[in-house]
Image (cartoon, helix red, strand yellow):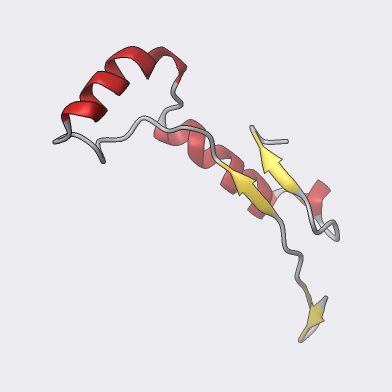
Length: 71
């Protein structure tokens, strides 16, 4: 779609499961993070897919995609 001579594409993405402190006061979250930590992404790794989808020139004019893990 073109609006005021600007190309706009719409895609969706899943950043992955990110290790944050959102559940720091929950006993369940503490147990979950203790077990799952080796499999969780850092905040920077989770943000990478969002930045990739927003800035990648190879996605220009390609809408309707679902991105995950920078792909």
